[in-house]
Length: 429
Image 1: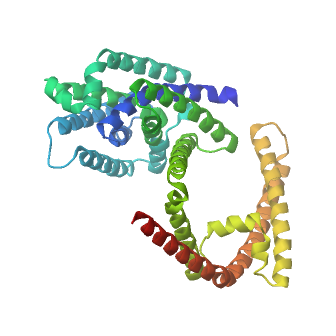
Image 2 (image 1 turned 30 degrees about the vertical axis):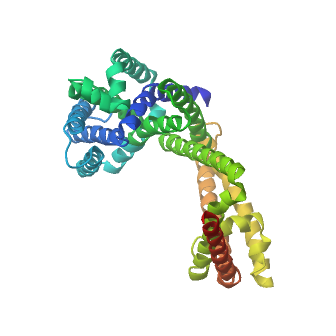
Image 3 (image 1 turned 90 degrees about the vertical axis):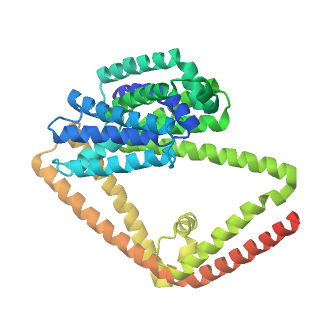
């Protein structure tokens, strides 16, 4: 697995190196979705090239994308220096929405349009070659060197725009140079990584680094370290669980972002508790009781909808669900549960055998392969039938739980939230 993933990992490192730096500029300028908009404009250029008969990975498609992106860069540079009655973020959003819509219309005229849209969104970083990675590294190295040479005006425009407006005579051209180089990077990245992955590498590491550091250099180091870590976890998870690589890496970024936000929130809550005592937990308590009352209300009104909290609770403590079934239903439940577990185990073994045959590590005659396929299909149908029995029994339990669990949860939640709200009001007085 390591030999298979090391080239995509190098590509992720190259993306991390340049995108984290550009992401800091994007966050400082308050144009969070400019990357997504330019990436979508680049994708529009690629789709136009596709309709003209050029493959997505061809040089012609790249130049189409670059031309479209430079046009978008010029528009964004003009909208920043020549203030309109609407904010620049609105212009960015309009460009993104229109580009996405036009791309859909263009791809609709191309064969296998849905597959092309999927590739433009999540990319094909798993199939990237070492030559492509080297070309990207060289291109991004040149862009990075240019940004280093003109770092003073660009950093000032991004992080101190008021001072830059008074000192920089040619601020519009500096802005266009930033957006043009930014568009060049985005265009090159979208072809191998897709729109979503490019946006994630640009925004998420930069956003997390802004939360935990003040200086630009410290934010760069933290962002690079985070991109390195997420690349490893995302690629390994994609290979281990046979998941789409681009989507897995993007999801991993989201998990890391959520974990950092939760840890910072918990740290702030601990400090508030030490300073003010348990009253600092009043908001958490109100939220918890509110969620309890909402869960009870939904169970009471819609008993057969997906109540995930109750599913998790019943999985951890099966007796909760069994308590609401009759003795005959419990016996049927136990038999069906055992049959489902046994069937899933057999299906997993059969699919592993099929995979070995596909990869050539196991040899079977065509007749045995066909028998294996038929047996797997019949076993899957039987297991699906047992699962339907379990679902029916769960629905029967839900009808009884709506009264014995829904009403108490709703009452306790409302009473607790009201009591804590009254307590908070007294403390504020």
